[in-house]
Length: 316
Image 1 (cartoon, helix red, strand yellow):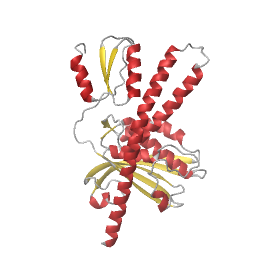
Image 2 (tube, rainbow, N blue to C red):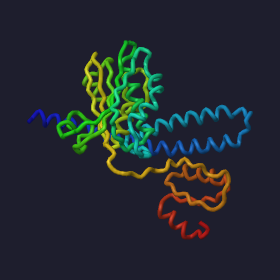
Image 3 (cartoon, rainbow, N blue to C red):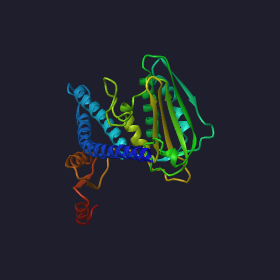
Image 4 (cartoon, one colour):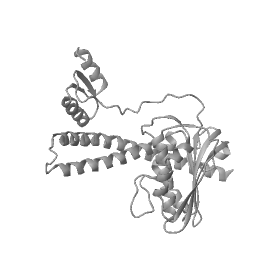
């Protein structure tokens, strides 16, 4: 009984630590993203005004590339915090894996062999295809890194498991999940394995055993899985390899599929647009963009100010 209590307390501390890091990462990502909106928006406007042969065009484009890479990192931070933007739809994990098989193959070491064992009767889940692909890629690349220069095998399996409370309490990073049937995806390797100390840190943002970092990696995986209402478990032994198993809820009801929001605005327009944002830099760059394509923007820094402007301006 005392051992069970110690295990529970350790898992509770780990969960609280990850939740705290998630809140911190989400807050930083939100503020950082607002700055990047301004940078990318203004760079885009500058590029529109520059001649194709302008001597400053290339350095401005390099600024844009660097800002886009920073935006990718911000998206990873939001994924880790569980505040990323998910476009949920009914998906079959086997189909997702099949679609990216070639990409997975070229992403691993030449010394690694990738094997698949996919359950042909796998039921669908409700998920974001792009985020699920990122989970697969990150786990496979992580397994390849663990194999390194040695010859090794990476196994990717899918299936269905009936999870009771004892099973869910067995080192899954989300013990609050309800009992029931879950779709699972499992990535196993026979690489270097991990010590207990390393296992306790692998989901920390920017933790890596490499000399060069790979962004958020497994931390992003954890955030995406938790954002999908799932859980992840790790089993690893030094010199024997590691197994990552992810549980995801089975889809059991029709769902609303959100629009992706990628529809393009017309090149030119007219009328008045009310812009509400608490960041001045975001309001200003949005104003410049709207003005450029023919709209008259009105700016407000919060909801009440926006409502006041709305009723004052009859043209909206």
